Amino acid sequence: MLGAAGPFHLPRSRARPERAAPEERRRRVAPLATVTPEGEEEPLLGGIFEIGKRSCDVVLSPRRLRWSPIVPESPTGDSNMALQVKEEIIEMKDVFSVKLKRRRFVGQKKGGTLLGITIFKCLHKEENKLTDCAIHLNNFSEDHCHSWFRCLKEILNGFQNRPKSLKVFVNPSSHKREATHVYYEQVSPLFKLADIKTDVTVTEYEGHALSILKECELQAFDGVVCVGGDGFVSEVAHGLLLKAQIDAGKGTDYIPAPVRASVPLGVIPAGTTNILAYTLYGIKHAVTATLHIIMGHIQPVDACTFSTPSRLLRFGFSAMFGFGARTLALAEKHRWMPSNQRKDFAFIKTLADLKTEKCELSFLPLQIPQEDSHENDRKKKGKNKKKGSKDQWHKIQGDFLNVSIMAIPCLCSMAPRGLAPNTRLNNGSMALIVVQNTSRTEFIKHLKRYASVKNQFNFPFVETYTVQEVKVQPRIKNGLDAKENTDLNATAEEENYPWNIDGDLIEASEVHVRLHPQLINLYGVNTDDLESSKATCNCI
Image (cartoon, rainbow, N blue to C red; front, side, top):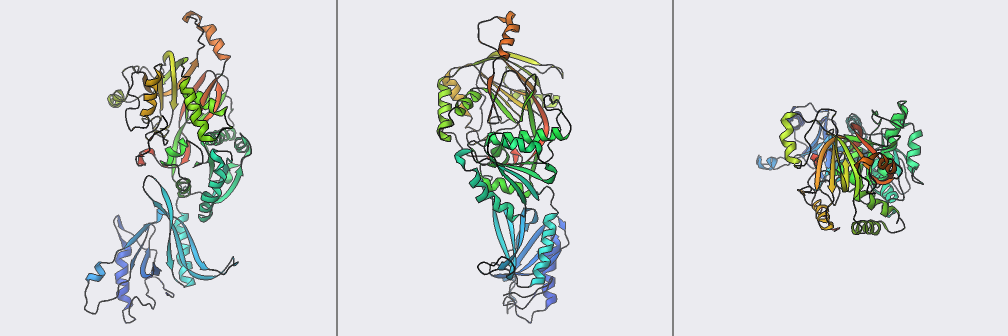
């Protein structure tokens, strides 16, 4: 085994005869430490550790940890053996924890025989999945290991955005009641390994997280994490943004210009659809989500306010009116059924009773620079309205099967490119997708097309718009003509309609949706950086 080894000094080891000159050993290590592909970088430490049962030269710089096995000198002076040595490199930005490795007896909690240092790294796997792996640097020297340990910790503490303290909300009632198990079995051990302090609340009723967030002193935390499904994520995101308005002294009934959330939000998927998690991570995988949070991968994300003429309904990222909302409303009425059965039943039942909603849509188109207009025209349908002046609203009326308003792409396993594939997390626009009246057969073809990678909207009854604001005003189907719109609108305002806002059921009539660019930071990566998902839809 290895003994004490200071920087660039070789201890007594089987890996090299004792007659070898230390100066020669230093000459071999030094070039390895100073030359990098980006240019020269001075090493912080160099020394000898046993890695994978081989004695290795190890060099630490601010950006990399590098090592290569020590090769015994050949009696014939053959250099081919040295050329076959493979150098290993770890990028320090991929390291999230470092621990002193000790051997302890059963029941012993402190002390123990020092064995070396263990480095924990975030490993990128296929299909957007992240996992953790450990690299063991063995050395029995207390002074040597403590010196390296302090230097490694100093490097890790220098990375920005990595949280040290988190407020965690767990919804025990989410999909199959698995959120508590997911957190304590998969998430909490990684937070502990990364030395992140947590304050955990297991919610007891709907709205519990919202009520806590309104009173919570968020300056004590570096971020907020929620473990649950889409509806629970919606509640926590709304509470986080609402808290920001309260702290800024703004009213909460009408918020035309909201302030940004003070801390980032992390999403651990433990629901059925997990749209926001798929959009941020490209996969439903609790460990992947946890590692993005630990590594401090942050994306500014556009958010919306959903309001009636008299009050704020919700902060959120997406909404559906019509088929998507009625399906959710029916599912909520059958909460006694198992999650997957409830979802399938509601979908099939709503599809069997397919009907339109008569309403008026008013929208403010996004102003796109002239040089980009040809690209926009290519993506939109021929029925799209021409762009007018900055404040010119456009209106369309009719019978619509579904209206989707989305500020993010809304990826999920059933829509690998997203429900709104032409928008992004923070491009300052919303996608307005309008499905007009058509036959059930054609509507099913449109839904199944989401499982494809292109042409989701290549139907004559589907129109898409890129917008900044949208107003949706339902109209009662009572046979009145256009001259009686005033009475009709008054009647409509008395009746509430279901809205699906981020998987949460909201009852309202006229709804005004405003986009607010980069209103909140979320832990995750940019949608364009995700690998293409191979998921397919078998639900129809």
